[in-house]
Length: 249
Image (cartoon, rainbow, N blue to C red; front, side, top):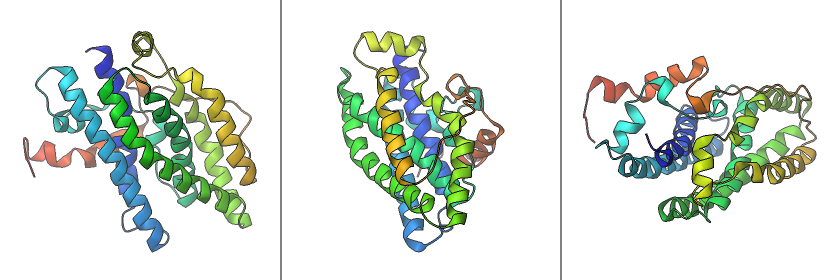
């Protein structure tokens, strides 16, 4: 499995799994506008994942389709970060998870525009437009909840405290990244950390929220070691392709 293929899967799996998580809220939003907004964000993420899987199918050179890659891998073969597989929880948890991810993804796609891989740069250009809206949406809600009632503040603070342990994995890099950075293909994630910290701290201050100070970090998703939640996600995500192999719409 070549480095570029692995790298594309990391980006695609993040989008797919978070898109699947958000799709669970279709028909269950706290208000009708949010029901529609979260469903549209889910569609954007799954659309991004589709473009990436289609490119991965070409790069992989194994005759697999985008659907094969998305639906027919085992749990340990997915390389999404642990953050995106966390349960939706209450609305505060959903928003906090989305906000952490969006804050990273805006910076990531902006940097990816400079990739020497023209296909990745093109996907980043389209995805960045969508992700800027996602970040605006999640940031505004984080401020609204954090600086709202005592209950909304406490709930979203609890979500921040729980999810913060998974944030560091967004900046995970290994030999896959090192090889592609030297070719100008991959983004040096370490270079985004300062901007990420500044971006998130600014919103947290407006939301009257604070980051936990325990510095506990949970990783493993990038190398296929997941929480128990991913298996349940895949049981729904993969059901149709497993039950009816090679089905097509």
